Length: 195
Image 1: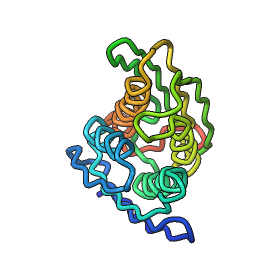
Image 2: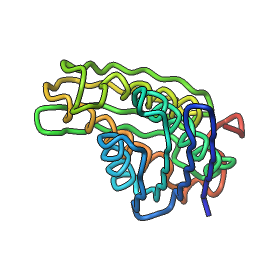
Image 3: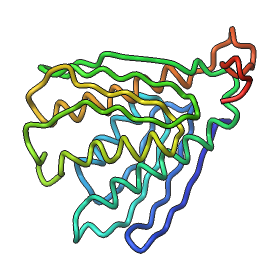
């Protein structure tokens, strides 16, 4: 069973996260940030990872700590669930259309964290959500999960569509990369023998 669970408590946030990699996309999300809840819900649905995220954060200041710290905890839970990474496909990429927007996401479950994020938003907010927090989440998630992650929006206008294409793209790429490849025969997909 590929399962990860993380509890993270700071002066800014109190977070409980769990995920099951071989799930059905079930989500129980309550971060106190409505738009972010929507993004995590669709992330679970499109990755087929069962995700539970509960956040109590200092949203009276802003949403930054809640979003970033949730990314840290989700990344740590994913890394925990992957264990030694034996048998996974490791690499995946996807082009994700969302109406007028097209985003490319490529992932390497390498153990070497790195983020390239080439996505710009014309609007500073989606409702009350700061669009710059999309990158903050991806940064925290990739670093703590040990992913090499490239996200590039090739074109798009609507900020909601751009954000959604990034999260759905991540979900679909991870769905492929984390899948167990029967041809690997339980080996780690690296000539080094470890990831």
